[in-house]
Image 1: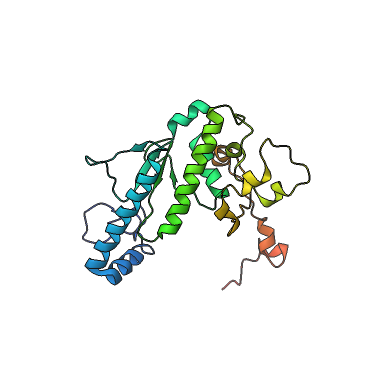
Image 2: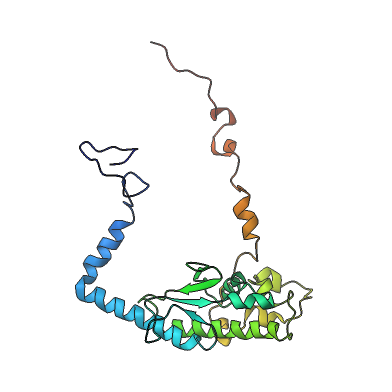
Length: 237
């Protein structure tokens, strides 16, 4: 049963917050399972685990990996520990934002462990795309090393200013201590299919704590302003 839509004769509690559950989501999972079948699901799972362990093998020399099994393997996802970069003033958010300059949306940030990246490649990514992601993560690690060793400023660096928009790099005056090329074309492959972030760094914490609505006033949705609130009570019978 559910407190919003009670079901007669049911005494068990609600199984989801919404009265009808995830009606728009569950059919997607059902269709996927039905089309793949038992053999397909098994094969997809094997590929997902293989992809995750391939990423682990490429990145574990650059980032500590949490929660590996007895044989040093991970499951279908892996967790990179980025907490020790705090000593150099680099946060996991800086890595996530910098990935945008390389053309990648960041993986899960700070879950299930704060200060980490949880990477779940699934069975869908090609080896070429996985290699590009690994190359980006390794390049970012080198950028962090530059900060750690003092070769890059602790505050004025590509990580702290990431992501870089086209508007920023096309300004006539460039005052940052790194080049425009390093900002937006950090690796050769980025030139072939550059993804340009639409906005630069924002204050995420401020946005979470303060509701800022960019919607137009309600009056804009009415054909005539007076139509928004009508005093007409309708016909009387």
